[in-house]
Length: 358
Ligand SMILES: NC(=O)c1ccc[n+]([C@@H]2O[C@H](COP(=O)([O-])OP(=O)(O)OC[C@H]3O[C@@H](n4cnc5c(N)ncnc54)[C@H](O)[C@@H]3O)[C@@H](O)[C@H]2O)c1
Ligand SMILES: [Zn+2]
Image (cartoon, rainbow, N blue to C red):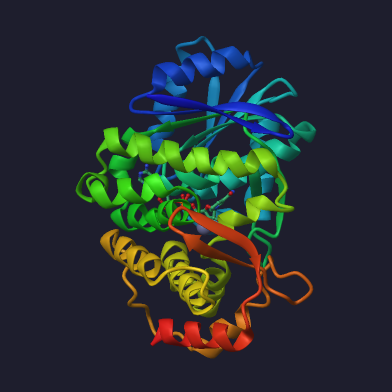
């Protein structure tokens, strides 16, 4: 088991990563000394939520579970209203706690409910997908989707504690597990050279979800994210490095009508960014090749469904990170180090995107 403390402008909190960590979860919740606890989960994760409830009950704290339908569609205002009604029924007051047991969907929804209920109650995150463990459960971004736009309504609300139980990953659908490696490769290439080596060395064990090695990988990803969140909680500067691969990635996701998954789209986005950096003589050919090999090795091949490059290109300036029409790209300089705020000439963007799609 490993533990780290994430510091942010709005407070510090522990992040614990281990296997079968019910005891630690109970201790952590007990330490928060809440007046009540309400668990939010989804239909696929309910067995894990029951385990969490049992662990907490043993500490003498009663808890109820609200189960939403699995899937991104539950990240909605309608579902938020239901979650808030649940918190009201459970009489969760300012000293109560919301416990999110699930992937990024449940985490974002329950996190936002915790941010607005009684103007903010404490949130304990129990992520159950690899993506949620390495990315969405830490950093404090919460929210739901608008009718047309993703993550349009939300708040920054840091959790009081994050507890990742790697045992949960055993039941995760393989495609979701593999997809999360796009974010892992992102941290490695953009921020952590040692993680690149680890990913190259331990492919077999990682693809088999070996807990011992996953523990170090999740730890390194959280540590990388913690480093930038500590400096820039609200994404006014350095936190933007976490968008490596997401500029062209989001564009492909949207242009494909979300047929391309987030992970595969980010893998595409990293390929595009690295090729742009190479053309601008900002990185080596070796970096591009190493990154390609790594993505391939983790089941993120460059074969994509047919998507019209023109549609992807048209979607790039609409990316929410675009400032005054100019897109600030995150480009890799060497393995383990990327830079934010680069301008890439439009003709070059067109060339690399078109090639990456052919
Ligand atoms: N807040 C942030 O900083 C942040 C960052 C990245 C992504 N996100 C958001 O996260 C969401 C995607 O997260 P996700 O990939 O975790 O998706 P998800 O929460 O929808 O989970 C994917 C699927 O796996 C199921 N599942 C979850 N854990 C399981 C387990 N242990 N065993 C079996 N099935 C399980 C879920 O029910 C769901 O069907 C998106 O909405 C995205 O916008 C947020
Ligand atoms: Zn992402």
